[in-house]
Length: 357
Ligand SMILES: *Cc1c(COP(=O)(O)O)cnc(C)c1O
Image 1 (spheres, protein in one colour):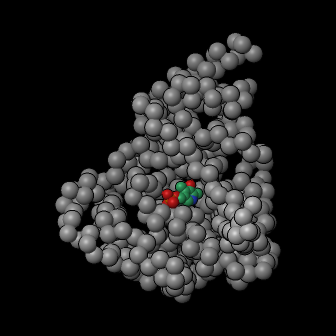
Image 2 (spheres, helix red, strand yellow; image 1 turned 30 degrees about the vertical axis):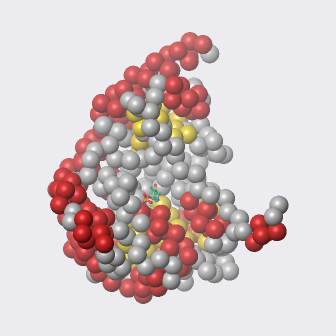
Image 3 (spheres, protein in one colour; image 1 turned 90 degrees about the vertical axis):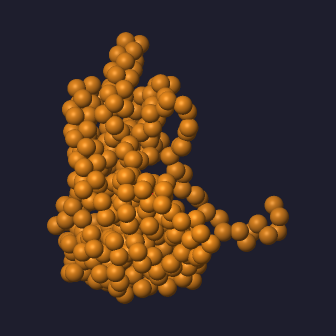
């Protein structure tokens, strides 16, 4: 080992889902949206004036914040914009979680939370979800340095009702509570409506899932002006120009096209409804999903076996080899056609596997 290595910051990095590019594959492993973004984004891309790229982008992300402000009915001083919600969440961890008391989050949730906690040396305690994967809100009524909850949760897909979030806020008036709403548009209820009541609430959303723009990298947070200012102070102390100029424009175009957004959401929700019924017929069970994915387990065949067999057939879903969830598959809702192919593949795999058992 070189002498200098002792001064390296040691971290255990986040492991994203694989991004294979096999021709003809069906990709249901990272919760991307199967439909294209709004046609207004395409038009903006075609009209982009190359000469503008000579200049630095607006560090305040004004145009995008303005569009979000109008559509979501929140003042501009209450909006923070970042490079995907991962950037927004990472900035929030760095800004708000500096107490000696540990921060709290569920044992089964977005695995990036413990990665940021590790990176920034934030003490944390994970609280076990109940057997049915629901959050026991009373577990969060204890001294802490902050709370983060994904709602709907990932990878469980379960939604917690707003009353429970409100109870957690009522019992935590001295720390910041972050609600990660990456999937809220697929049937959850946003904590945005609680913003007027709680100055310690930060609501984080993204363009990656419901707006079909994972490749553009835009996330945003809503919170009290004092919280947003604190996050901006940290951002300006690290990298003032996080948002590239085209993405600020494309993001605004996407948000302004709510008619298209709602149409795509309805489509995914209706696909989810029939997929749930079909999976149940094949012997799967799953929590009630309010997200664009299902978290399914089979009554006989181990999840890992199904995962590998699907991969043989060029169908990618997500499998987590972790305690409590190692018999589950996380399946993104794709197009109707993709889901039909998945169903026939599953029927075949289950038939062959139960014959050889
Ligand atoms: C996908 C996801 C994110 C981050 O998405 P970005 O692409 O960085 O916006 C954050 N939280 C959860 C729970 C997610 O599933």
